[in-house]
Amino acid sequence: MVLWAVVAFCLTATIVPHYLDRIYYRGPASGHFDGRHFFNPDGEDPVRITARLLWRQLVSDPDRPRWPEHVAVTPSKPPARVEGGAMLTTWVGHATLLVQADGLNILTDPVWSESAGPIGLGPSRVADPGIRFEDLPRIDLVLVSHNHYDHMDLATLKRLWQRDRPLIVTSLGNDGVIAEAGVPARALDWGQRVTLRPGIDAVVTRSHHWDSRWLADRNRALWSSFVVTLPGGNFFFAGDTGLGDGKWPAEAAALGPIRLAAIPIGAFRFEEGQMANGSHIGPEGAIRVWNGLGRPRAIPIHWGTFRLSREGYDTPPRMLDAMLRCGGADPGRFAAVRIGAPVAIAPLGSPPPVPDFAAIEACHKAGRFAALR
Image (cartoon, rainbow, N blue to C red; front, side):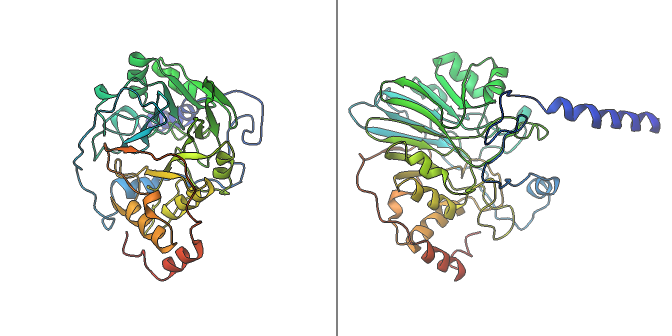
């Protein structure tokens, strides 16, 4: 009996990883693809999710800050369209944002499921979506940054496709994953674009991250940020990202002035006191991204919906506000918004001054942010 158990274990260890290591993309090698796997061209490898990290996250980390079991949300009902040079955005939660401008309805990394993980496993929502799915206006464009479960929710993509038939734009290889739900997507490499109408393009741009659905299939598909070019100023969506070499925000800004940016600030702390990790920027890194984009009006995302790391529930926006103030920046230009609250975005104007990053670092060394766990 023991012998058969050993044989079964060996067969499983040999066969299963090859099954899970799916090939999502085939193509020529490039500056970020070696013919088998994608990689970050700046050379930094994002943090790996180890068994130790998972154990601490799920079972054994009694000192981590508490999160609420549920956060009250008042969902809104957006208009069917926004015209006439206006721009309206509503944070649905996590990395899901509805942006309405120039008669176009854009949805980023849409997730309406109750949990972020395979077969119903994974972190559960503490906040309901800020827009009920049935109250969504007709969606024209969906941006999917990569294939992690908290960003690529196949159940939601299938519902959107069956209802609206939107154009779904993603980065290389992720169209194969989305196709598993019977949904077509347009997969592009960094720097490539698709035109929706004259003057309005969806451009896939660089970010610093990694991909996997099953751990064994790591980096078989590409990760990205996006710029949507618009007549009144562009929309930038960072997706999910670490800072890396920090040059990619300027690459996005080179496509034209940005009117609105969605920048992640959460899931940055896996160890006590950590301020960033290779996979996720924290508030300080988010300010650097915001600065590289030209300091547009920005909405902080990727916090307060799914617990993915060790920091407290509202630590990211509180730390962001404190750092902006330490750096002499206007915190109103990059301020947290309430899930479900529609926000009107002002027309393009002169950008605010560059934050004083030396002052932010001095505040950090002086312990000004130490209480924000």
